[in-house]
Image 1 (spheres, protein in one colour):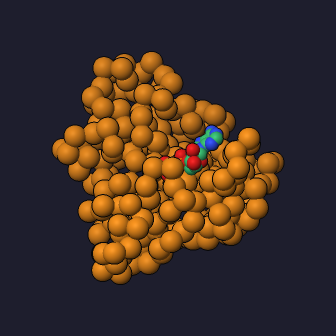
Image 2 (cartoon, rainbow, N blue to C red; image 1 turned 45 degrees about the vertical axis):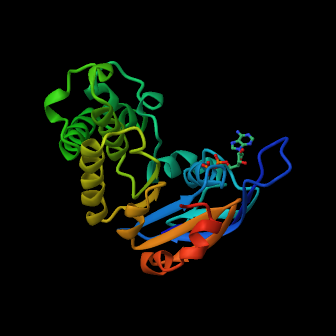
Length: 236
Ligand code: ADP
């Protein structure tokens, strides 16, 4: 279970906290959608999920591992893969294969295991035929799938995705989300930050952040019934 427990966070030199007392969970094999206006704290929560930021108070616990345990940060980053909006910011290698091998290499895995994971991950995202290509020559959708392959090669249990399809056209978006659905059905827990209310309709559970506070947590049907509240939360 990916657990956020009474999480509060304030950036240095700011007065208003980015997150206030947020508690929620993402279970293995579940699809959780997080909504919220710009500035409501969604990216901050995503960065707290895999230890890029550490909570000021409260805790992030991933399958029993506390993100504040700095000796186990590598393990945490392996357990929780973070996909952000712009793939160009995440791609570091000059070939598709090197990009997917990068994470497993950093884990110090043996070469045969690295090769196996790279092939499996490229197959999972439909990029097997492009191993020797330069990532710069790929389309936006292919680049985002490459980022995902690099994360899958680390065998994460949870995927936290911060508007991963915001820069993609609708065909690429559908392709990406089909892969995510496969990953969820294989047991990975998914936290999807998005502005797209149609994604919320497909979620097991929806979270709404407003000015750093969790103002809604529940099944999508309950959210879609809350017409007046949607306006208050600036989701329309
Ligand atoms: P969202 O992802 O919902 O747009 P963010 O988590 O990016 O929200 O931001 C939450 C709040 O924290 C906002 O008020 C934002 O201005 C502030 N914030 C975000 N990043 C920083 C930073 N690096 N330094 C100071 N304040 C920040």
